[in-house]
Image (cartoon, rainbow, N blue to C red; front, side, top):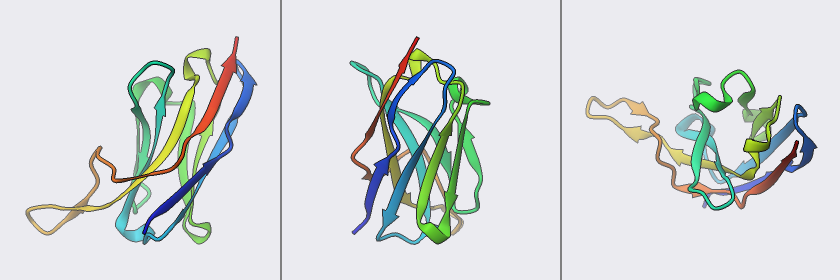
Length: 127
């Protein structure tokens, strides 16, 4: 059973930084896709950044150049380094994981769907 435990949220002023962590258990990093999502108050959850087992990353446009997703396989931990935070980054942040999908040619790949979720950690950015 996959378990994800997120931490690192808090309150910062605009322009500040935070690093979120997500400790994972019950999964094999080489077979999993992982990501960070956010859910702003009153809005739908949306993806911020993803990383596959090879370390390839992708970001939504609003966080490119400010956020960095990374993982430490030895510590079973996913990170999201958030710099130059803005008030619009206020949200509950969730880490997510899923086993890689199997393509028609036998290849394994990640898409934007996730099956396992952490409990969320709150980020508050004041102007």
